[in-house]
Length: 285
Figure 1 (cartoon, one colour):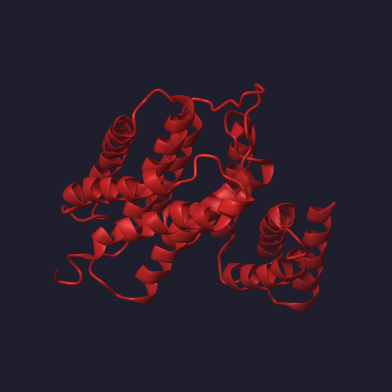
Figure 2 (figure 1 turned 90 degrees about the vertical axis):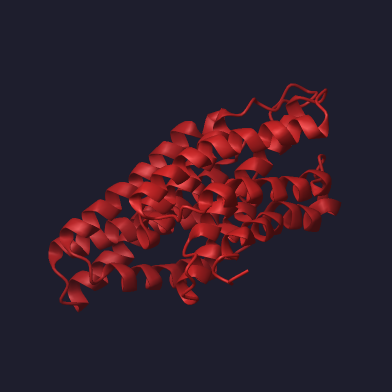
């Protein structure tokens, strides 16, 4: 119902009050309507009243200059992202709103920064769903809402925006390191829940090794394609080990309302701090 309302409220004014072609008008309305529908699904506490009109204006500004082919690709990609995360949601402990937010975040990174920078986020998501399933004492899998995704994406988008606003030679390397650090932290948090007999050094070593192997392979591809510098080969293991050393003692293994601020610090800003390793060459240190 909301998609229908969003589609018509976009399509009719564009068709009657602008010079945009009919095919472009249809594709803009379909894509914007679908994205706004997802925003409505994850909005909370009445914030959709602000997010939806501002989001629609932003989408119209971005989509209006695009060609028919470009618009068609964007429509197919957002639908594909949404279908993928919805089909895989039962493999995760993320709520429906959280997996929809994953789809929107991935679409935004792909749309504004390109396909390669989507790969670290996709790898982090795949690592998450491949981890051993965490089960509570009652036999149920605990669910995590959109806050869990926001805590990761806040740091990731922070570095993407910094790279666009400040022309440093490191480029998007801190973003790559930040996502890798998050992946290591996620692995360590899950292992502490499902491998309670393991010592913290054991958890940290396994988390560091798995993260460095997987993101090292992706980083090697980025180096060969020219997206990442060769020095990533030493920056990656250093950033991940620094993040784990800070995260493991700081993360509250039993999150409660009283640990809300601690969660944001441990699950967001520790990875951001660790990924500053990527800025060392740019600062001449």
